[in-house]
Length: 249
Image: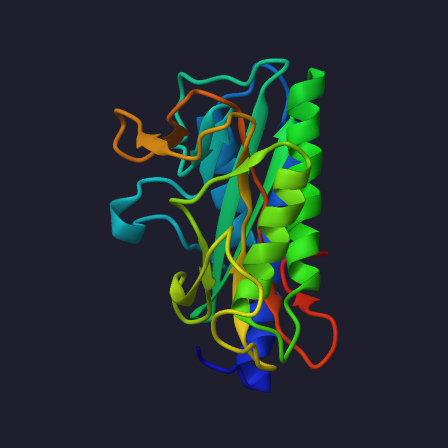
């Protein structure tokens, strides 16, 4: 787990800001009738306008600038021109920005129109679980403290964490050590040190099962039981105090 110096962090902060600005640019367009391909095109245009490149484009062959996942889709949703947003959908948008060779990664789940109580509860709990996990990311704590805090919060609200997908270290590469599970035991795993950069990303569903399946497109990961799923993510820096979120405005 590499520790970042001041120059490296300056690039990561800028990458994080660009990723956050890209999500902000998409928000006014999250309306019924908008295609996911149209959102992808706007995201790529925004990333490049700030001097960044889309991290996901071409990553392991992925053909789009961002991932857009709806309803029972968990992550890695493939934007398509024939898929339009509908009122009542929940939509997760995952953005990676590479700036001067350094990467930041963020995701947010949005409501399209009015949601039912179950979908709104899912979004609220997953959002709050992210910040519970970030609060546990303190120098001197164990990596497992993050995982345990996240799992405990989610399950205390009657929802399920996805176990086949994880957070990760981040920096020069999109995915670096360590693997950050969304479940686990406090007091286990490596000790966190100032200068570590992590991407924490709770993926939570409404069903009792945590297993996933791969869609026929070869990219989109869905809940196996067809239940709704939400995804939130921030890239952060471990410090001697509270973690610094690099992907916020």
